[in-house]
Image 1 (tube, rainbow, N blue to C red):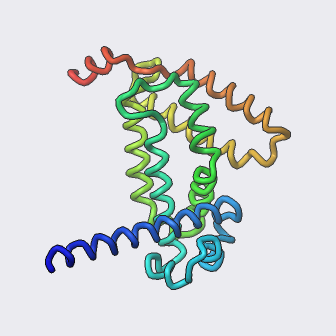
Image 2: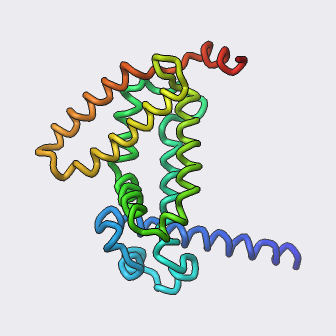
Length: 213
């Protein structure tokens, strides 16, 4: 009887996680296709094909739903940069891959919608502020552990990567005003080459020396 009882909560927990994932995936689609202002419980409900009660049971407000969706997206965005334990890609490949696989994707476009919304939605900003700061610090630490500014200054490394991320997000907002996808790709390639002259992959030997120091 004890064994049966212990298994039941685990099954319920899994169903709850699955439902949350389903709702957040529908939210991503709505944010990407409709924007933050037009993303409502009703539209998420229709996209996920569930009841409104299923949404509000997990997320009592739109801001809570969007904040949870944002953290899922940021967690996913952290890992695809390169496989753990493998050699980091060259700077050009890192930036081009970040653009095509992370930023210019459904999830990337949804994140930009959320970040823009934080400027005017105080409740959403309050829910996300600390998490966004923590994620930003974690992301910069990840990059600085494998890449370095040609100046050798860690602060400059973090600044260069922050510039890169902001350029990619800004280009996403600018995308609708660009004459052709080819021109957008050309802009990305040019920017990636510029960053390639400013950042380098840290060699294993240099990394060990830095750790000792």
